[in-house]
Image 1 (tube, protein in one colour):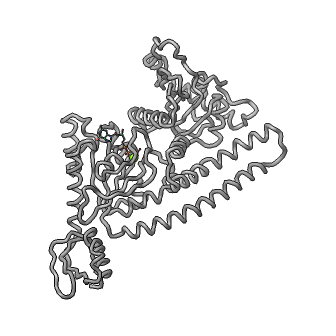
Image 2 (tube, helix red, strand yellow):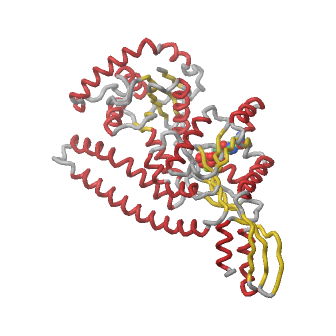
Image 3 (cartoon, rainbow, N blue to C red):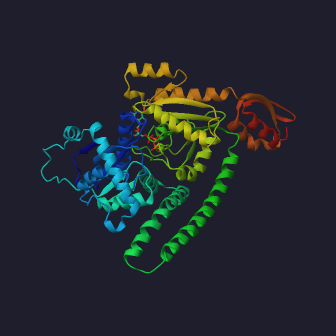
Length: 470
Ligand SMILES: Nc1nc2c(ncn2[C@@H]2O[C@H](COP(=O)(O)OP(=O)(O)OP(=O)(O)O)[C@@H](O)[C@H]2O)c(=O)[nH]1
Ligand SMILES: [Mg+2]
């Protein structure tokens, strides 16, 4: 177990992070998970001022933590440390007995005092800086509605779970109409079961009578809203499908990867577009599509996509399906990895898993180790020998981006074919279509029209041949 108090920042709400180290999870993984949770919480605008973690066999107990550990947590937040007796049922008493047994079993392998002292708060806090009592508890696992309610009772603080944090970040960062609707769907799906629990409790406390009609009403409202959102989304997506259909035979690459890997930075560098780049998790929620610059012949379209994260709630994956369809339809996927992150290989595995789930693992791909400007030569050499097929680069170095551009064009060159097109003189005004979609190798004129020898993707050539009736 570890209990750490860090220096507080008076302007932002404070949060305590709670993690359970399950069997099979190494210390390093557990530490990395909590560090990631701290970044998520920071993105949401809270300061993570303390961490409470415990090794446990599972997450099934009523409060996730053992009784002793729960008391420690409650001391930080100013709560009672117990679930109010009225709310405790027979099973939770039994559970409590089990938990205290569990906690005492764990004591020997988890010396508490030394770690606490190791990370004690700096005594010399700046004058005027008050150590704030944390008002939020963030648990690094998905909680059941009753676990959430029990923890709120015991800590007296607002309790969020990992999924709740991610859903909130998505909610704040969604910009486009489509992303907003997708996030609202995920949010309502997340809130609906929890709403039932908490509203039910309140109703009973207020003695508003039998049954849960108010809850039923709320749930019906949510169902109606979900139906409305799904309908709206279907209309937008139809529109997008059409746009995607129009791009179907163009060369397309999609930047995919873990959140914060540098996808948007590469998007900017490759296309000169002004997409948002930020040192936050889930800065990008909308897919942007832009042409590779300087423009190539045929034109290559690059798309920037939403990032992935460990334990990404399934609802969110589903609601971002259309964003990810962009990846599915690309002819080349650029897997962007933050090589300076010590957990990059676990992050790459998450990316591969999500893409496998949506069926995009068959799309040809190129592995990119980004941010190598932060690595020394030895670390870069280690990456090269482990992944000889990968490209090491920094989105901040134009010469590296130039090499990536070449690599992309080379990947497409292999799937292109040569063909002859004849553009009748009557259709000369549409000649730009040919130039955008193919490389024109030679040109000649005769009585039938302009004769072109071109190189392009088979689908593009088939479409042009049909369009010009040649
Ligand atoms: N040192 C260094 N920093 C980089 C590099 N590429 C990106 N960054 C930084 O990493 C942070 C995240 O970059 P983004 O491009 O926003 O990452 P992203 O993958 O689009 O992230 P999400 O949209 O949140 O999924 C920003 O602070 C960038 O400035 C790089 O090659 N070197
Ligand atoms: Mg981004």
